[in-house]
Amino acid sequence: MSTLILSPSRPSTAPASPAPSAPVRPNLTGLTRPELAAALVAGGAVEPAKAKMRAGQLWGWMHHAGATDFGAMTNVSKDLRATLAERFSLERPEVVERQVSTDGARKWLIRMAPGIEVETVFIPGVGRAGALCVSSQVGCTLNCTFCHTGTQALVRNLTAAEIIAQVLAAKDDLGEWPSDKDDRQLSNVVFMGMGEPLYNIDNVAKAIDVISDGEGIALSRRRITVSTSGVVPELTKLGNATQAMLAISLHATNDALRDELVPLNKKYPIAELIAGIRAYPGLSNARRVTFEYVMLKGINDSPAEARALVQLMQGIPAKINLIPFNPWPGSPYACSSWGTIETFAAILNKAGYSSPIRTPRGRDILAACGQLKSESEKLRASARRQAERAALEGAIAG
Ligand code: SAH
Ligand code: SF4
Image (cartoon, rainbow, N blue to C red):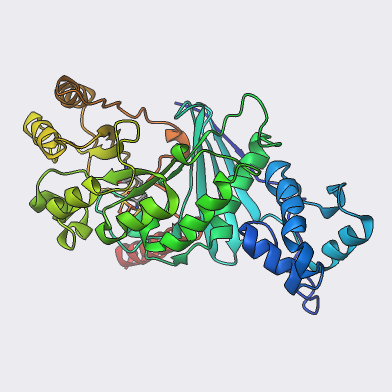
């Protein structure tokens, strides 16, 4: 049994809430370059002619150096630093919980606003060095039957700044400033946390612009992957706006089963999805689409389904991620046996497709992508269970 190191995150440094009368200083963290320039002008700190230059200076401090204090910005005059500190903030959202798995995976619960809590996971040994799994929504509208997030109603879309804040929080905790530091662990970002990124495409695209900016966090767009359950009409926009790598949560090779597992399939069935993928901008042998396929015991894991998958992918530059199903409390499925997964993978490999089996990471901290659920929701669920238990005990006692 693996041990879990749980450390309450920086309770002592958690920012105090401003006094009720204190004016709220706009936070500059997570704005795009044009938004940053506009905010500096709107706040009366910088004249319009100098806005672009000043925004460039601040950008480097915020996104290359990771500064959270205007005082650190030594190439900005003392007077301007004081004005900036008076009118703006660089505060990070509060990390309310931090967990480190025995295998090096880390999970943070970040409070973006009251009631808006988001889980973000870092998984070492994925991609070039390690992948950060970010959330794009709190909850999800889509109700995939194997997904923990799907059991939670959508609370709201995250803003671009809230998506970027997840990357900043991870870099803070991993000690990855400045951004061009050697031996970086955070090399990839995957939108595989909570939510359907293509239902929040504008904010996802903005966030990708910021985290891929060469003078800031500088993550290559080729190392940023957006996973979708198949919102076909948004695929072209995603490719054109972000040049991100595409991952498709397929999970079934026929419409009857996919309708059940991924209910969005009723709206955009497999044939439409495949046509949308073929048209994805920039798709090539060097930029393959990833098909994600969760291995559910006795549901979608037969050799015949592996062969059907090969048929479906014919002519598409693709690779396959076989994901061992991660059970969660109350989940209606079991994970396929290792032998079944290997047989399935062998059929794909024989047909010429790379099909790594994603080794489960961070299981001890429920850190797998697709398992994320906001803590507030868990607490509500646990309160509900307690109430149910009390009612049951009452009934038995009666
Ligand atoms: N909404 C997007 C991205 C978030 S889910 C999507 O569906 O693609 C990220 C990945 O985790 C998806 O492939 C999803 O199908 C998978 N997933 C969800 N729940 C899972 C579970 N319990 N075990 C394994 N993979 C799961
Ligand atoms: Fe939403 Fe993706 Fe989970 Fe489906 S798998 S419920 S789309 S987060």
